Length: 119
Image (cartoon, rainbow, N blue to C red; front, side):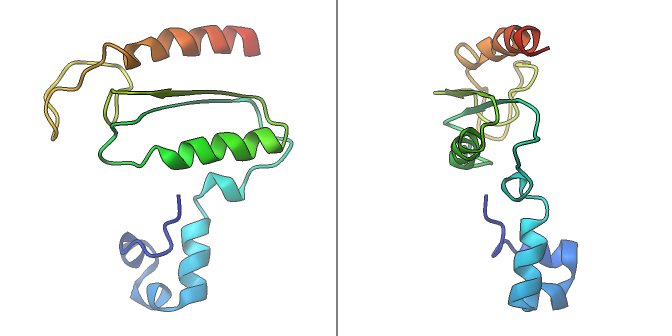
């Protein structure tokens, strides 16, 4: 995900760093996993929900493609629903209503199977 023009960087790096285009780009790139992938990375389990209103799930698909090109083993799941932060799939009212975990609730079993095959 490109954070180069995210104003939150002004708070993280300071206003002067935000004003300097090169410093802002370096600061934005530093936490981006795409800039840290190499052939030595461990296998990745990636999952997201298409209806995530807080974090665009598309960059996760891009991460999957980049990892595959580098020969990093990946397992990737993009669920149709589940919203943001479905981690434990605990039904609770969020900022966008009560999420539907009927599909994304599968992630824990998929992860458990993946980790057993990967170890």
